[in-house]
Image 1 (cartoon, rainbow, N blue to C red):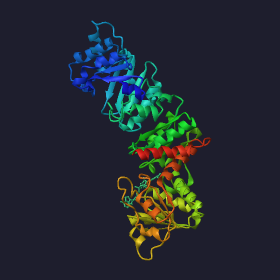
Image 2: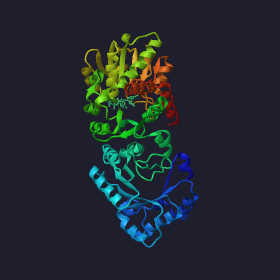
Image 3: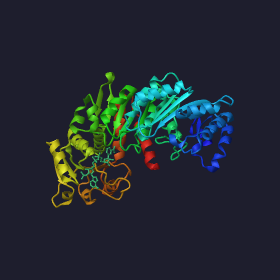
Image 4: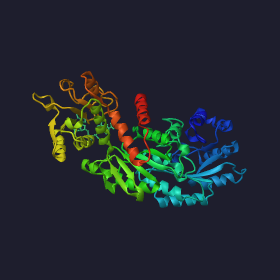
Length: 492
Ligand code: NAP
C-alpha cells in the first residue's frame, strides 16, 4: 500500500481473490491502516478472477469491506441481484458501489457498451466499470467515444491488453473516473496495465485533461520504443499541453490513424511495420517522402488534413553533412556506399542523391533487392553484392552508411563490412544502429581514423524534425532529447 502511495497512486484496489493464504488474513488490516482509500474487489472465476468461493460467501467479503471503511466495493453487474438480496437484512452499505462488467474474450461495440452502461445506471451504480479485451487498436475509439458521452454516472472504461494500453494512459483526457495501474513493473493485475510510477512520471498522468492534445508512436512491436520518453520530455520542457503514447497497431494502420483523429490525436510517429501502409491514410505526402515510398511522421493540419513526411532520411543525411562540413568536405564530392536495401536504405539512398551526392552504390545481402532499389532510384544509383566489396578492383567510397541491423544488440560482435575496406580511403562511416551506441563497425572505423556518425544522431534528429513539424512555433530541446535517449541506452 505504501509502495502504491509512494509511486503516486490516489487510491488502491485490494484484489482479495488474488491474495495468497497468508495475505488473506491481512486485507482487513490494510483497510484499517488508512494509507490510501481502497476499492475492494473479490472477483469470481466466472468473471475472470480467482475466487472459487460460493457466491454469498464471496459477496459477504464486500459487505465486510464496507463495514471496515473501504471507500468502494466492486460488484459484478451479473451479481448485483444476489448482492442486493444479501444486503437486505444488513446495515446500509457505506462504500460506493462500482458495478463492473468484464469481457476478456472480445471487444464490445459502442452499442454494447452503451447498453451495459445503462443497465449499470439502472441497477444503482455509484460508478460504472467496463473492461473489454482489445481485439484491434481501433477499439480504443469505442472507449473514447463512450467515455465522452457518458453523463449519468462516472464511468471507468478501458480496453485491455497492449492494443488497448493508450485507453488506460489517456483515461483523464476523455473523462474516465479513474484508471488502473500496477504497483510496479511485473505486478500487473490485468493485461496492458502500466506501472503507476511510469504513468505519473513518464506520461504526466496528473496533468492530462480534456484539453490535452495526443501524439503517439504507431508500431508493432512498440513497447521497446524510446520515442515516448524522448517526446514526453521535450513536450514537458516546452510547456506544451500534450502527451505522447505508445500505440501498438497490428492490423489496419491507415484505419487506426483515421479513427483516432476525432479524439484529438494531432500527430503520429510511425515505425516498423507501418511506414508504408500509413501512406494510404494521408491526404498529402511530401515530395521526397512520396519518392521514397515510406513515411515515419503524420502531421494533422488545420481542417484535419493528414500530411505524411519522412524525417528519417533528413536526420541521417544532415548528421552526415554536418560531420563532413566539420572536416572541410561536402556530400557533393562523395561516392556513397549504402549497405542494406530495406526501408532505411531507401530513404538514405534517395536522400543522399537529393542532397547532391555524386553517386550511391547499394550493397545488400540479397543482391536482387539492391538492384531493384538502384533501378527504382534511377540515375546516380547502382548495386553490388556485399562480397564484391572486397573483390580485387572494388570501388572505394567517401561515405559508408550501414542501414542493416547487423551489429545491433545482442549481436554486437558483428559488422556488415570487413575492417580492411575502411583502411585505405578512410571514409566517413555512419551506422543506423544505435544500440549499442558504438557498434563494431564504428569501433573499426574509429580504429582506422575515419569520421564516425552514430545512429543515435539519426534517432534524435528524426524526432527533433517531427517536433518541428508538429509545433512550427517551438524549438525542440535537442540536447534534452539526446540525453533522455542516452540515459535509456545506458540503463538497457
Ligand atoms: P528492413 O527494411 O527490414 O531492412 C533490413 C536490411 O538489413 C535488409 O537490407 C537486410 O538484407 C539487411 N540484413 C538484415 N540482417 C542481415 C544480416 N544478418 N546480414 C546482412 N544483411 C542483413 O529494416 P530497416 O527499416 O531498413 O531498418 C534497418 C536498420 O536501421 C535497423 O537496425 C533499424 O533499427 C535501423 N534504423 C535506425 C533508425 C535510427 O533512427 N537510428 C531509424 C530507422 C532504422 P536482406 O534484404 O538480404 O534481408
